[in-house]
Length: 91
Image (tube, rainbow, N blue to C red; front, side, top):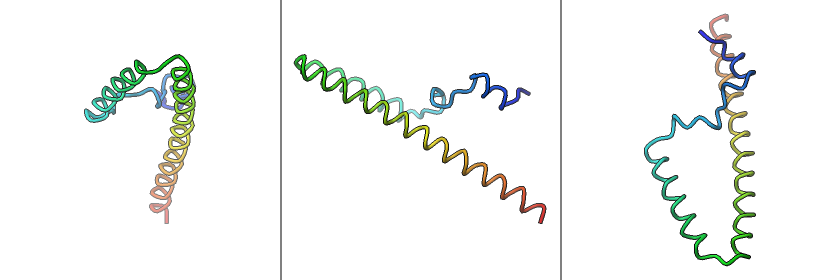
C-alpha cells in the first residue's frame, strides 16, 4: 500500500484536479456552462470580450481560493473527527 503522505508530498495527489467524483448532474451542468459561455462570447464586441475575460480570470482565481479554503476546513474537520474517535476509545 502506498503512503498517502508520500504521494501527497510528491504531487501525485491533486484533489482539485480529481474529477472522478463528479456526478452525472455536475458533468451535465459543466457542459451547459461551456455551451452558454461560448454562445455569450459570440455576441461580444472586442471591448466586451476583454472585460468578460477579466471577469472570468477573477472568477477562476476566486474559485481556486474558495476550493483551497473548503479543502483546508474539511481536512481539519476530518482530522478532528478522527482524533475524537480515537480519544473516545482511550477514555
